[in-house]
Length: 416
Image (cartoon, rainbow, N blue to C red; front, top):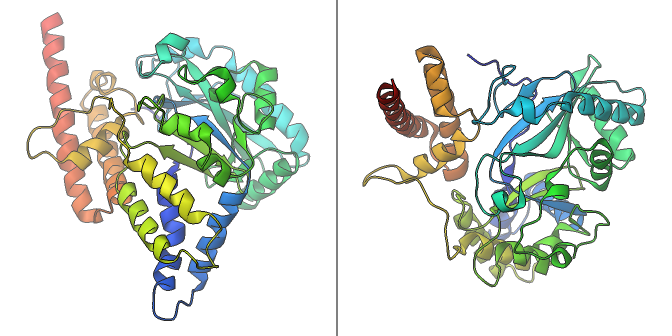
């Protein structure tokens, strides 16, 4: 059974859900009798206003799977270590990333120089392994390729929590957009990261890919000086023609599944996806926000332009592309929500057929991890009650894994 990934890339929440989490307490209290706000509500509004007004960067969310490589030669998928010489998601990642541990070590040394006394014990570059031949990935040559989108750092000091904060603060002084997480220090896209990756010869999502339906001139219509799309504020990005070309193009077919936004206020990352993607209950949450904001249109406590921003998010979340990507076929009576999160969960592990080859113990372990992931996503994305989510997850995972195992077994028998 594969070892666990010791330095996972943090999960990124949907932008609309983060807005809802910040706004819901304040809106509820503003529409109450006295309109007084408690600390939680005031904090949520302040956090949202900070994100809306701070500069940010936006990168294409490529439909693939996370793969990381560190300065010692460790290769990891989203959840597990990739054994030396093994393929991952049917890609020869060891050949693909040959020579990268040396580049990551140079990356670590460069940041160590900037960090001064704060020792960086481990650095891992994370990127998207483009395992799906969707959109224009084959045409532009990134299919089966790897494109860096960020990094994780582990301080060497014993006081881990404080060391992560100190390292984060030190690198922010040097212009890097970083954030202290439980796992380590996350290095988000920034002009400084872009410059360093270019010097090291590491291809990045923002440097090596642009949707072909958007012209070079249109793509460059942002505030940044390099290839990284950068904007003076998140509000500016959300309301821009640049974002409209991505989510609401004239032909009705978005050129990608969405964007990943990195706020320079605190290094926070957000997923912004269009209505053709699986969004859970985010459209309903945004609709509720917009309705409440329309009633509070003249309230001076709300950030300026918030209603317009939320209306744009709602339009993006509820506009279905004229050509939706194929969905998993469902039999009548099947749990569509659980199936949707199961499909998403599959991208966080190696392909099931590879696990089947490793035997029953590995298959049982993978099935347990999938049940755990689907349960968590049903609670988070659809507000399911945990006990009920576990039952639904167990049912759909066992059904889907069993069907895949049966098909794999028949294929093995037929080729014997």
